[in-house]
Image (tube, rainbow, N blue to C red):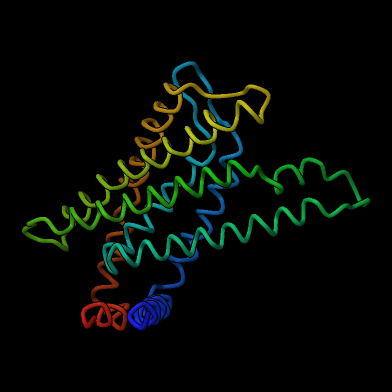
Length: 246
């Protein structure tokens, strides 16, 4: 019991140090992108016999880019913890949105507003499960690839390989898990028979992963410059020293 308490104390201490060390801009962008993903996932943008895409594809690349930046500099554990924080804030935001949607108002017709803010519980469930699982996969892959015998582990090539491979596989799993849970599991029951086939879910996952990989390729130079600047300025030194001294 004493060892468990000590472990909890140490983890709490490490998390507090991490929150002080990760630059606020990256954490803010990360949290906002997770919240936006949840809202945009309520709308199907494309539905054809062989492919379907929801609105979350427009912003999910930003979440993965932030995770890649944090993993590169602080490690996969730190990125997983920030992912849990983002998910927690998203759940709290959804709760506040839901409360606002059920409060009656005679000022105007807020039916559409309430419908959007109220959300759908199984979309929230699916997006949360898919995001957390894919985040752990992405962060683990990114870190593992980064530990390979690169000639220059802090160079552009190493960073690009870390981000491209982990993002594609992470996004693939995120899209597939979410679409299967929501559009094959719950939608047929709660949306009057509306559903996606497994082929549509799979193609959504592949197409979404490709689209988000393209976005990662376009914006990865920004991520590389950020991590390079963090390293040069010794950003997060307290957390990195704490991790090395464990």
